[in-house]
Image (cartoon, rainbow, N blue to C red; front, side, top):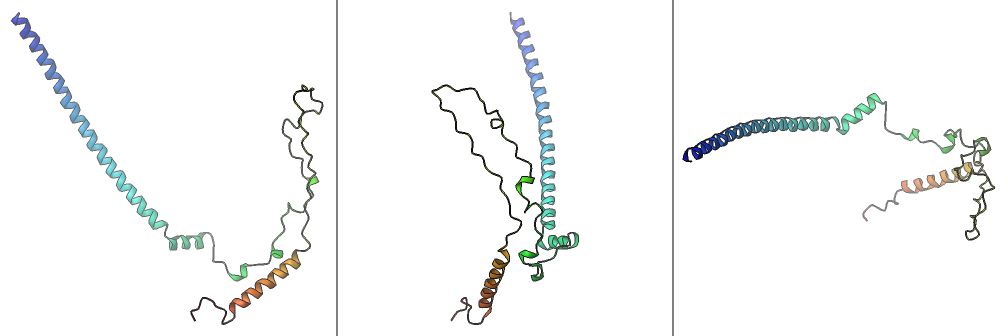
Length: 173
């Protein structure tokens, strides 16, 4: 019996030793994998830092303004760029009567025939939807030039009052 017990203990010792051997190599492999992932993570962080620096450099206002002027032929607005409303072209789709436009599609229930089956007496019939006549758009308002002239005169009076000496309320007395 002592021989059988010794043999079982020896086999158990061999199995535990083999398990610890395999476990130690698995831990070493995982540690190497962790070191490699940390190295890749630090490289990605460095790349992100470089990209943020490049973005900061490329999004500088003076750089963007230079690019806009060279590539988009943009320039600052001047007083010559401001025009009266009458100088703007009138939209082509305005001023056309609505009858020339195609009729809007009706929802499926509104397109149903008028002779619907009779409903039970307990439920009252729904009132029909109101019919909206087509809207006509005027070609161009006739009173606009007179209103624009009044508005221009009012703006000119306000600007004139602002430019007169002695009317600056921001000055300290």
